[in-house]
Image (tube, rainbow, N blue to C red; front, side, top):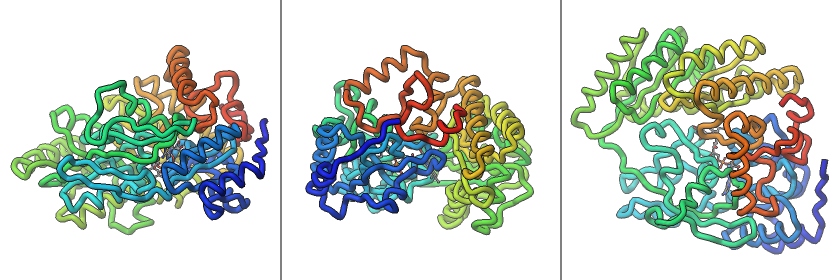
Length: 483
Ligand SMILES: Cc1cc2nc3c(=O)[nH]c(=O)nc-3n(C[C@H](O)[C@H](O)[C@H](O)COP(=O)(O)OP(=O)(O)OC[C@H]3O[C@@H](n4cnc5c(N)ncnc54)[C@H](O)[C@@H]3O)c2cc1C
């Protein structure tokens, strides 16, 4: 285990760059940055730094390079794979002071922003022009554009409008040696090597993004939202497959199981039907003309799949309360257990039924409550394994069950992550989805950006020797040797 000791000279130099106030070093402050929303893996950084400009980020990174100090970029810390957790210690480089919406260009339909802005504030700023930023993770009120880019975040409306990567046209970033570069263009993808494609989704391992040019989408003329109850997830899942098979592409299809439904109702008192086994939200958007015909088709498909009850949102406020149910669902699970380990496996939509049944079996085997709230239209599952981190046996059970679920996803033809990234959480499972040659190609790419391996080390690409080597901090998963 390497214990990193940062010199007082290093700390003084950091303070000269960003000002004393923006370098945090007290035990209490550091504890606030010891994890993201994946709370099983805890590792405190040695220092927290909050730069206020691209130039300051560059100077901090250059300093880290000179002293060979690892740094971990961080936005709001809502990530669910431990990506922003400083597993090798060093500096937690927090971007939340970069909150300027620099420009909204309605003619080009592009927003130019600093990366510390929250996802939702981009759409709020573009609303005036009848535009929005389509990727809408459920964490959108808190998560930052930088974190969204790093994780290639999705959301309920990804089914029709794509992931973050489909909606970013350019960015400014600081490379791990401190150099400031522009990737892509201000208005459209540039015709060069697709470095945007390399950076988006690289989980802060190839540099620090400081500004982004985001593609905006015109608000739809008409939006219709259906709330449909089914006796079980299987019936709802079949309705999802049948809707797509009928050639209909809703902008969202989201499923919530009975366990989660109960928690949401206890938290928000929305009058949800608790006798149902599954709740499916289907949202359709487009031109006014003809949308009612598509709504009727969708409802008919739901009826053919054991529909129990259906409601259509009558106005913006009833639509908002339907989405509130979905977007608060994870937080409400705190009513069952103090911790949740949220997985992010992807499977082909046609395998939804098989996957849901197998996940329930895994939950029984390890005696863990597992909630299922997922982007059904994308086959992106989020089983949340509910547990108490203070109970070692439960943590062991979570790690084993999580591994089995990821193995299941890969076996069914899917993969390890749809939107939350690999981080430290799934690093040991990478060989399930990628062969040695592919992992070697990823390693070469990482080395060419970051030969010193100081930019978010211990993430995404596994050190294949043994599982304790992914970070120099002793993580609970390593102590339990469960991986
Ligand atoms: C309740 C809840 C619901 C969620 N729902 C969704 C969802 O629907 N869809 C979805 O995709 N995700 C979802 N997430 C996960 C999370 O919100 C996203 O991954 C989000 O993109 C993380 O943003 P952040 O600002 O919190 O980033 P952080 O958690 O701070 O960081 C995430 C990763 O990005 C890197 N990073 C952060 N900023 C930068 C930067 N400027 N430059 C380079 N690297 C950077 C970090 O190093 C880390 O690897 C949810 C999380 C929660 C808690």
